[in-house]
Length: 299
Image 1 (cartoon, rainbow, N blue to C red):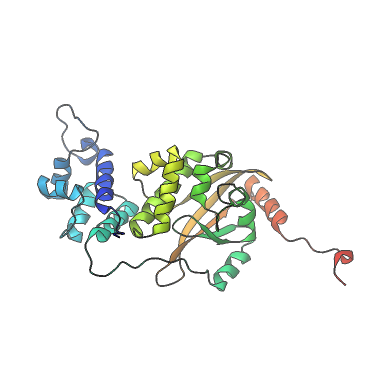
Image 2: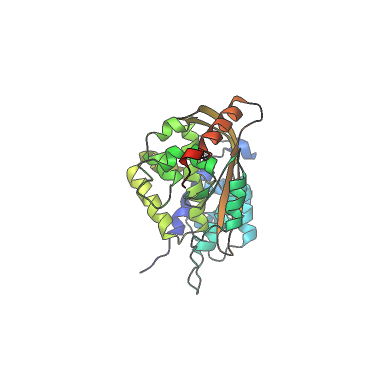
């Protein structure tokens, strides 16, 4: 059975959607006449990249055999791809090229104990580790309390691990938890899209995308946009059932745990002295184990 993903279709759709986002004015080209399609024409991208229209048309159809990294880089520059989009394009091109060896498959591995010790030492910040499919692999106590709606969601409780994308797209309650739900949905889909480029042979990932595509019209819409996100940080507004509104700063970092596996470490914290910091401290106290009363201790 052929287990190779349809990289040609992914390359075609990705390049076409990036091309549609640009206008001639943005890239310094003259505008003339009525345009039948939004964005740049293929011949305009070819001019910007320094290649022939026929060659670029062939590339946009997914034919990447023999294409050098220099030429791919020129196309990425012509389309003004950001670093994440550029990385994604190169990953798609690499996966589409024929190889004699069977592709290596990423396997999830346990988080080393020192990493868990690090997470547990953070008492005023939420910290958790996720894989590329947005499964939560492990976390500290405060993250377990902050993300209780995710862990306890009907969309994730039947699974081995809580999954952020399933929660966002399959649990209507996520629209209350994530105050800026549209942004959360866009980021979740973009993270999965980027992972699909890095790990095109991950069957579990393809199953997840298929499940979300079947059950969520919102996911199908986001997936069709072909946006990608690899590294992300910023501010997140949440509504927690125990402490109310929270505005947190988050940072996501790569966490290599083996030669083959790289997880993502995500840390949420609050601005010192803010209302959100006070509420995060309250949530931390609620998450902390309570000391036993002497009368309750076993004898």
